[in-house]
Each structure stands twice: as structure tokens, then as C-alpha cells.
Length: 113
Length: 112
Image (cartoon, chains in turn green, cyan):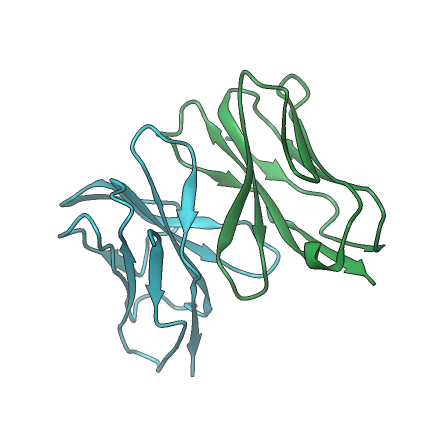
């Protein structure tokens, strides 16, 4: 059964630093992997979607990588800002899942001014 | 603007009471989902529907019920059989064949 893990559960860094959030999954047989952002008490906003055939995706200051063979994805945030403070979740869609998302528990990111 | 609307934002339930959470989308998506989110855990799937008048149980369906009478609407009822309903509930939709899921803003349910 596919499991998704995000470590650390929480991260606090000073403004301006580059940082990496980690997501690992146990089975590389996936359609894709997605990174989402969740602000406190709010719904989820999709940040980046990486198809299984892709190695990375970029959007502005965000870059997500995917290595299916090792079961790992990273979300790189460049020049962090206080507005980046949120919980970041990753999710995979396994090939045998009827398109159901399997979620990590998230990393709560705090950017200190 | 297209999107998903959940209501109410906050809901309080008394012991033994059934409550219904609303989810409406105007994205013309076929698939709709209900997730439960608890602190420190990933989202858990309650029910999903791929098409009108059809729905399937997710991983934690016990104590919940849904209906899908219209493409736009997928209400979730939290019944008295759900012993620990306090949580944040998220509704999502997805276009058939698409990967991206769009989420509502959530409903926070509290038992009083």
C-alpha cells in the first residue's frame, strides 16, 4: 500500500533563505505527484504537478523535482518570504488507485521576518 | 468565477445530531471528493463520486453518507454514528481525465 511521508513536520527559517521540503513515497508506480499549499483554516491550492515522465517543474520561485526510482520529491523555495508561511502538502496518484490521491501529513513552514 | 463553494465555514453539532455539509462546484467537473483533515495527519478520503447518481466509499466512510443527485452538488452528512466528527472537512473536484484537483475552503465541524 502506498504511503507518503513528509519530514520535517515543521520548519522555521529566516526570511531570504533558500529551502527544501521533502516528500517520500513507498511505491514509484504513480501517475504524478502534486505539491499543494494550505493556509491556516483554508482549503488547498495546487502549486506544482509533476507527471511520472517528468523530472521537475518550475513556477516562479518554486521548483519541484521527482525521482520515482528513489521514491522522493523535493520542493525548493528560493528567496523565502514571510508570505510563504503555510503548510505544504504533497500527494501522489498511484497507478492502481482509480485516480485517488494519497497524501502526506504536510510540512508547516514558518518564514521569520 | 469558477470554483468550489463549501458551506458553512464553521458548524457545531450536538451529540446525537446529524448535520449536512454543502459542496457546490461550477467547474463542470465530473468527479467530486470529500476529505477529512485532522491535525498532524494527511487528508483521508471519506467518499467520492465519479458521476451523477453514483458514489463510492473511501477509507473512512463509516458514520458518513453522501448523495450526488446533481453534477454540481455533493453534500456530506455526518451522522450520529460518527463518534469523533470534530475535524476540518474539505471538498474537492476534478475533471475526468485530469490530474489537478480543486479544493473548497473547508468546513470546520465541532461537536459541542
